[in-house]
Image (tube, rainbow, N blue to C red):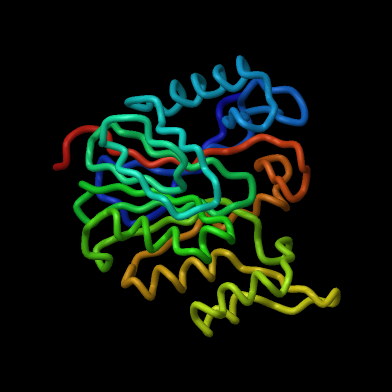
Length: 248
């Protein structure tokens, strides 16, 4: 089976590629079957290393992706700077051939490209990071006019499957009352949370005008996606963005 990869359909200039690896086409055993790309979930290190090799070969990646130590925060690193990056939930690059990666298994990955393709960004937006401002921090780190940015939101847990408590809703509404539209009360006295809508609100407030979505729910798409909420012990997929070759 070939490596599964969902190509991003977004407003990107030629030479920029993006999308999200799915769970198919790897060699991992249950509960990590099969294309687990995360080293921190208990899978065999050799299997993860081989899956990363398979991914790079299948996509003809120009370099090894920058694998972040994600921690549900808002720190964004410059992927072009020297040294060990440390924990972070976002990254930006201005270099061709630099591959940014966000590991997910329900959280929302958000990828960015500037209008001319010279600046790329990637953010890991679980509800904590999203509420704390990881998207705002990533856009700020790109240092370009937000109105010229395009964003793509990758596979994530959908609102029908993402139940949260009142404290999650309160964290978003305290920042912006319009965030109430991202929550629907359920029969259990809790809330169904729409991460994509909440991300779109925040990006729109920054001035980002071109936003597209993968439209794929990790929790409901068992064959295609890993889901932490569904399975507990499971693998991780990777959303990727890179520029191949010089800017035209």
